[in-house]
Amino acid sequence: MDKVKLTITKASCRSGYYKQGDIFLVADICPPLCHELWHSIYPNVYTLLNGGELDYGNERTKCFDSICPDGGRVHIHGELVKEN
Image 1 (tube, rainbow, N blue to C red):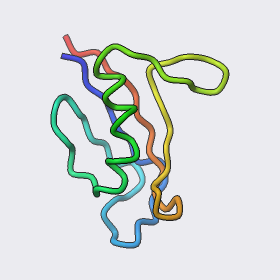
Image 2: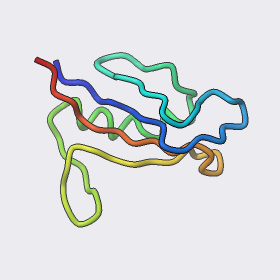
Image 3: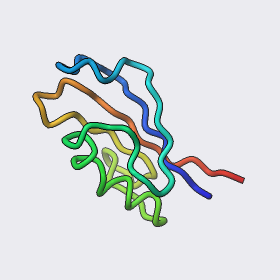
């Protein structure tokens, strides 16, 4: 089953939920992310889990970068990983 690997690339969360380098694997349920961050990245995660591609600069790819809607305090990178 394919999964989306979410990596925290920058963290200054006001609640201290994340630290840089935290990794979450998503297959079919919501990972332990705050609602604001999850809601902002869910469409991208859903697209990747269902075989789609996303705009990434000037190309189409199976990854994305996003920032927390709370002032960009947390940056996250998502990428499709193949599981055998």
